[in-house]
Image (tube, rainbow, N blue to C red):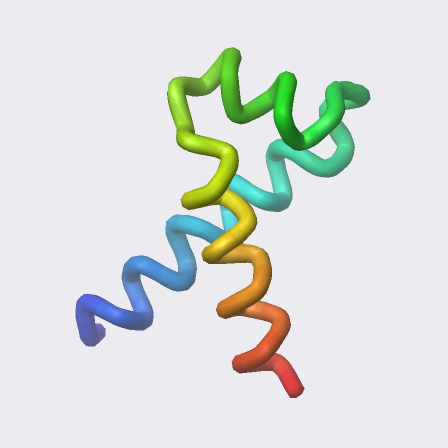
Length: 51
């Protein structure tokens, strides 16, 4: 498995944990020590790849 695929799987898992958490994306990122800009970068990249 390539590093890119592994990274995509990792971020997909994090996004999947965030969205149903009941927190805003920003609150969830703060609680999990993830920069909000990094989170949204990966959301956008995964959306773009799925199209």
